[in-house]
Amino acid sequence: MAKAPTVEDVARAAGVSRQTVSNVLNTPAIVRESTRVRVQRAIADLGYRPHIAARALRTRRSSAIGIHLDPYAGGVSGVVLDRFVHALTEKAGERGLRVLLYAARSADEEIDRMRELVEGGEVDGFVVTGTFHGDPRTGWLIERDVPFVAFGRPWGIDDVDDPAHLWVDVDGAAGTRAATAHLAPRIDGPVAFLGWPRGSGTGDDRERGWRSVVGEAGVRLTSEEDVAAARAAVTAALAAPGGLGGVVCASDTLAIGARLAAASAGRDDMPIVGFDNTPAAEALGLSSVEQLPERVAEGVLGLLMGPTGSTVAPRAATAGAAHVLVEPRLVLR
Image (cartoon, rainbow, N blue to C red; front, side, top):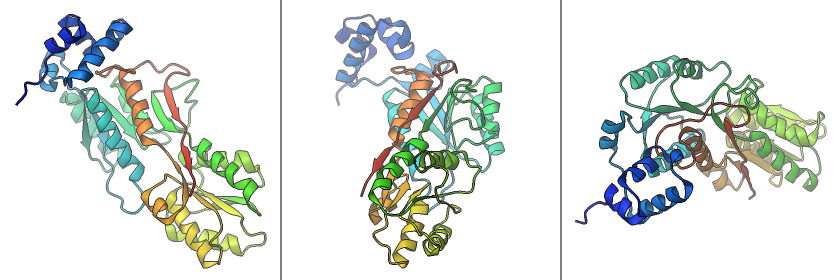
């Protein structure tokens, strides 16, 4: 079996000292860019991987970040977060960082689990998912100065000019805006929006994108995140005066319900756009907005570790530089 490459092998290939290689791995910001690139190229060419256990002993770091694993929901839900966790694990591994998954059934229980991981020295930071108004998890982490990045905005505050913490999110308004702008000139009748009851930060954001195209006169339909409820809402709208020309939906679950309603009404040709681009939408031939969770994972690690860093060293939450907003992609079928 071939011997695994060492730090000394990397240093020799890059023409630098062992300490310079160590700096590139642990504190890349202090290394001149041309030297850093040369060392990183040698690392890639040799296939060098840091020894995580040895580095943990040397640096007193765990080389791990924690992320909550949502309970299995079944159906269409959960696909985006599954892709995100997979991408985060893969991209973190490329930087010599492990992802530690933990389960919790509530925000309070998650805080208890976070406390155990921090006090046990098992993680260097966290990725928080599923943020919401008044989220106690982010407040707990900020109060204890624990590094973290949220996948989801800190809803309810000025998250760009006065950010409370680092965050990455998908620009839901941009996605529904693109979908509505695509449908509007191609159909007869109004482009409706099928969304969740108001008060959901994510849902309200997606509604704003649709509203920016259709104006205040647009037809807004409401449904819980349920196929049968979505089908009922669209069935009623199709029977009402004026009908519908097309529907932009806040999720693929709602879009599936809309498709069933259209088919029952003899409107198989009615264009419907979902959100999340799940395998279910693809199988049914539904257009959808794809969130690109792989780009979200890159944004999270960039904020948490720097663009090329291999240790958790988050930037300060300063105005205009504390977030990454990923523009989604409209997938037409």
